[in-house]
Length: 485
Ligand code: HEM
Image (cartoon, rainbow, N blue to C red; front, side, top):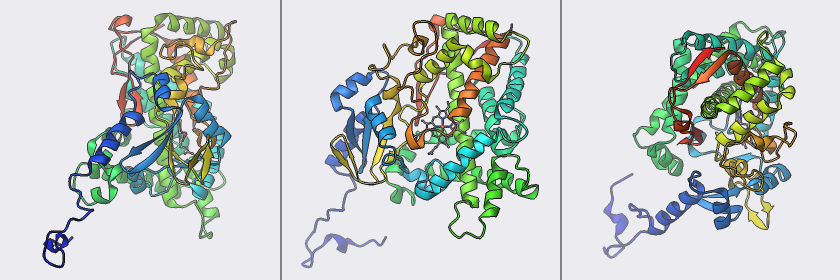
């Protein structure tokens, strides 16, 4: 940190070059970042999976700055890695950004024993919290009634459904993790959601991208990236407040939600110095579930409704199925799904077409690994590109087209497809899959049972191509009318 021209002088006082003098970076490094960006973030709208695979093969390496990343492209490569070599490919690569915010805590960005224990605990708890008194299905059905009421209030005037869908979906995970739902107008609730949104937008800024490439330098620089860290701390403080209220009213014989179950486990293991059930892990895991349970599901719903506006004949067929199986006298429930193959196929197709998490989450290899003749050293980052699986032309005819027949057999029955990996696969497969699939079915069917949807724009003018934000894919903003049926 000292100013000293002597660094560039030799013993005789002549100028001396220093290899570490790189204020302009190096031509080689700059070139590699450029070429790699193209490969790692293909513009999926104009490069078909076949084009990328033909050019680079199903397994290729890119450099993000100086970091080497192995990219897996297409169903076969992703499945062989995540499913057939699940143990090796089950690690999580931490971006510098997350290392500073989560610090190895929580479920999403942890590894080793911490991840194993938190994952097992979270899966069991999510399964049980259909917990105790009310099942998860009932919690979702209850939340949907609030949403439908909100829709009724519009009296058929056009509405941008973004905020109300996000609040409603978020309430479901709030109910499971924190034991309570919030009014859609609740200021604290809106604040928490807006903090998350603000950080999602920041992930896209040059400052944050630079932070991920050069954390040691950026840690010491002022700039908008610091707001992201302050923002995350604010989210943690909010959850810490909720946890404190739970502590004060905890009844160990009757856990109300995920937070209670975690606090009970903390008490049981309080004398174990190596316990993974401590305050920080509770806060970050709760935020992981809250975030994971809000954005992905609500974006899928919002995108799905836009697609249904675009294709009214698909909507009409779902409504026929609703009339036949459910009718108008009761609310939809999960037992209806096996009897509604067309609706099930449409929801799968929405998830496939929308592919909200196109790059997937970054993995890493947990040990030195042999894969398709390549030697991948322990700790190497691996990106299983889920977009390339969900749009793999070997498994979906005409994958760029929205077509529910991708999940229907010739008799009109629902047909599974192994390449449906919207929730990823293997050791890290999304632990919220069951909850999300339940939400998607109940939200879509309840909305279509109660309302006729229409758009102020003509269906042929609706643009269903995506916008990209950080790691996620979003629909363009739109308006819709909901008229009670
Ligand atoms: C992980 C997709 C809903 C919580 C993931 C991953 C994907 C994904 C692709 C990365 C898996 C990997 O590392 O390979 C989705 C989609 C959803 C959804 C498409 C809805 C449509 C949810 C819900 C929750 C949730 C409702 C909360 C209950 C998580 C968590 C992880 C995760 C905590 C990290 C798991 C781990 O690292 O072990 N999700 N998810 N997700 N998801 Fe979801």
